Amino acid sequence: MVDLKALSGGERSFTLTMLMLAMGSELGSPFFVMDEYDVFLDSIARRTSTRQLFLFAAQNQDVQYVFCTPQDPNPLLVEFRNLREAAQDGGADYTVPPDLVVVKSMQPPRDGAGGR
Image (cartoon, rainbow, N blue to C red):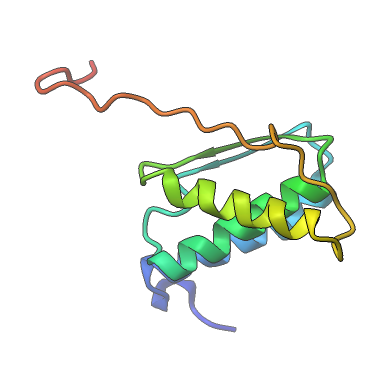
């Protein structure tokens, strides 16, 4: 057993994301929400995590997913396109509808507009 405090922020984020995916299929919840799952990840780990989240969503389409990130959404869209193309090329036991992933972006907060 490894002391989780010995892991870097990215290693902890990646481990937690994979643990949530492993548990997700057993929870039976109609919602699956991950907030800032990629905040400490490098680009390779972010791509891997995102691909696994999208693959899980494609294989479990009876659940609604919300993935929140402060990062640039464009790499997420690339991963979604890659997953969808792989499913269309055959060899996958799932389909990926074009509306499986919808990206919503928020404007950054204005200067001095802090919450109370």
